[in-house]
Image 1 (cartoon, rainbow, N blue to C red):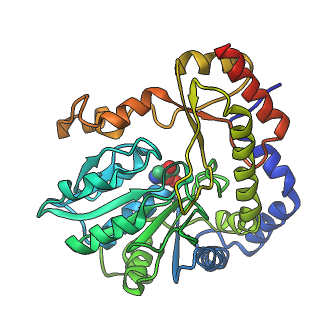
Image 2: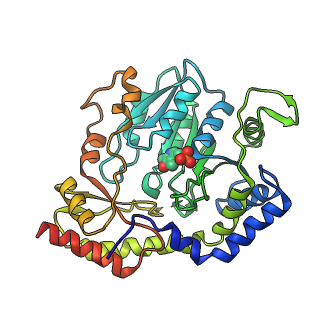
Image 3: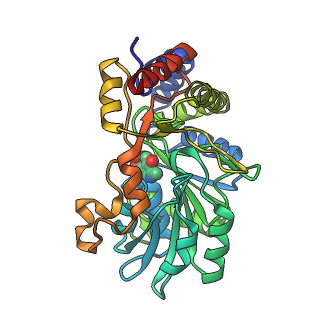
Length: 367
Ligand SMILES: *Cc1c(COP(=O)(O)O)cnc(C)c1O
């Protein structure tokens, strides 16, 4: 049996007619760049997360970069970020000329260790970015309190956490703004690239809307230096179709996680993902910690089970950040996790017999 890491093809065929029709409409209306289909998606996406405003952009990285630009963060400023994240989180900080200050993660949930944040605050700190890694909320109440105490901005990197919840409310409005990715493999994926910023702050909304369009709100009148970060019309139309299914798909992912847990909890060589009290995990990734991780991954690959590593190198040890002077041992938990983690196949298309096949093969490997 082959078990792909994600299965975008069967997802497409499950909603093919609606998707094809939506693309046809965009072609007919030639609404290619931003425009009415993107607007419609922005409205619906904001509602789903109880946010006042949404700005559709063309990637999650653009969402982070435009947010930092709009908050006025730049050269000489520091931004606190977890080292255990995808590279785009600190990269956006570097793109505005500021310095990422890395923080280690907590062992249980792999999210930023909130106990280390205050020690990292200096007079140069302008913002903190919390990542809801793998689809589980960071401790946004604690982070928000720290941000308020030191009067710094709080940005949520929600690229992996569409519809995730914290204490019964959807994530996305705890801080100044939140940034989403619609990269094709994310829980809500475009057919190509996409991203969005959510905010309740009208002033910030207006600024990011301008930055997305070369710093202008009136054509050819440029008030600030911006970028071309407009979302493509076709992506807006596709995302609008897929958004209707996102709740069902999220429930299916959670159900699949339960099936994995039921079949793997007897396996003492691995550690299953924990759900934090009060957090609704949306399982963008189902990440276990495993003894002999590399051998296990190879064993599974031989059985046509495709796994992933999120992430093999923590950001503070990436070559691109050599110039910041971090060294091995600086972030022990993230470094340890990078050697033990393994992302098992996970999507709403995954079937119970496939999950059981994966679980049985893991047990066989250790037996
Ligand atoms: C995917 C991702 C991003 C970047 O989004 P893109 O749409 O690929 O630019 C940023 N942060 C995290 C945590 C991500 O997983």
